[in-house]
Image (cartoon, rainbow, N blue to C red; front, side, top):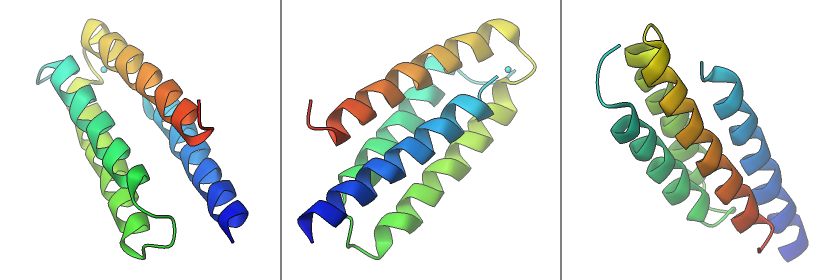
Length: 101
């Protein structure tokens, strides 16, 4: 079952990363603060055991948090670009962790 758990984690991270990258794109709060909060949320959710029934709920909360952050930034080109860069880097790190790198 460990192999199945590992595969599920990788799939979850890839899906979340794809969502992160596709939903990113600009006014309100600090872009870096919001992006780091979203990244921390994903890191904590993805660190949960794949068999934990609350893991999916935690990941969905991160998706919501990211959407709310995006709504605050989407109309500011500079802030949205900063947010996208941080989220993109975070996603890359989460994928590396999921692959054991």
